[in-house]
Length: 203
Length: 203
DNA sequence: AGAAATATACAAACAGATGTATGTATACGG
DNA sequence: CCGTATACATACATCTGTTTGTATATTTCT
Image 1 (cartoon, each protein chain N blue to C red):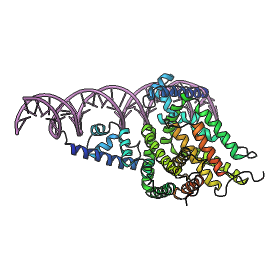
Image 2 (image 1 turned 180 degrees about the horizontal axis):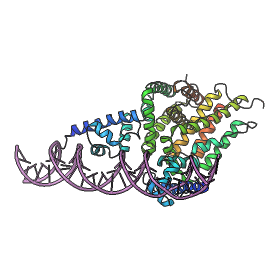
Image 3 (image 1 turned 180 degrees about the vertical axis):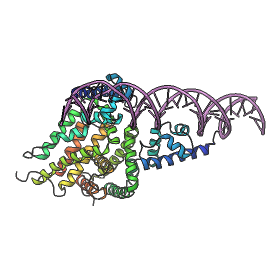
Image 4 (image 1 turned 30 degrees about the horizontal axis):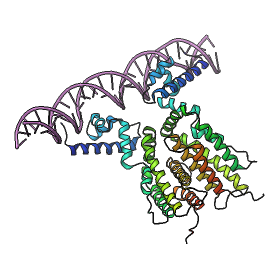
């Protein structure tokens, strides 16, 4: 009755895939653990063994793809040799372009993200801190290159920019926000970066 | 057996109060509807009659005090005769001062807000739109008084400022964020307002 | 105003879903 | 080859939402 390690891994993957499909189709509350287990060809015991919990299964699903802001944080790694603020802006523009595609996935991913935020806030905190750190690092690089106005210390600019992005992306994810990532938010970011930076003193 | 309208209202209030106390003490998942009902002197029937649901009870609790950003939105109504950006900044400073008190309530209110965000996103959207509208109105007033730099149209400035505030307040609410509302966020807001505004051309 | 009709405010009973405790066959490590 | 941890299945107790029952406050009709 006991499966091999590889089989167990397949079981886990199957449960994840079936769970995602059912949750996506019927909503989180409307699908029972037993329904998932049966559709995957097991009993609830298997689900509880691998994920301990319905909540655990949802969190594993969130971990799998990564939450939207987490994926954003992963992309915000800028080459220190280039102009950091320009690079940063370009990275965000590309990321937002990708995010505005995939509208099918968006709603489910958003509810999953909201669920994760409510159920595992500490996990969320960690990669929020990552994003803030990544952004602040960029502004520190800009500051080191004398590209920030003196009234904008890197810490302040980084905090403000992190807030701006996370706040607007979250609002956008919830939908019906009445603005677009690629036009409005990018516009706000452009204006912000222009407002904190000063022209290259070296020419 | 049927209660009078007034008695029913008292029943509802009792359930809310007992529910809040128990949820606060033991956490949302750890307290059952029956536990609340019994502690309030009723059966689960009463809870389900008044709130339909455990989720409904939680949302009613959230409605009662209002979510943090909702209360903030209520305070952002600025006298159009005064300097709108100065007034706005002062309002935020006062509100943040109040928020950094009441540390006892903060954690529970935050989990309640996260719960509400996950379970009733449309409700959240509505007062997020309120806050954005209130902020944008202020920047429009400033624009009307020629107090915004031309590279900052009111819509862009309002969107950016809304994102900055909601993003940072939410991050702060989750705790462990490593920054303070009254110093760091206010500092970022001051710098932002200074960056978008220009001196009074008439004075 | 009094009586009948109806809606209200719950309690009690029921059906499913949840998490936990336990059982067990077997892959794996020593 | 033997002991143990693993990968589940099964059984159980609790919690959940729903349905039904019912006494009575409230409304409506005359």
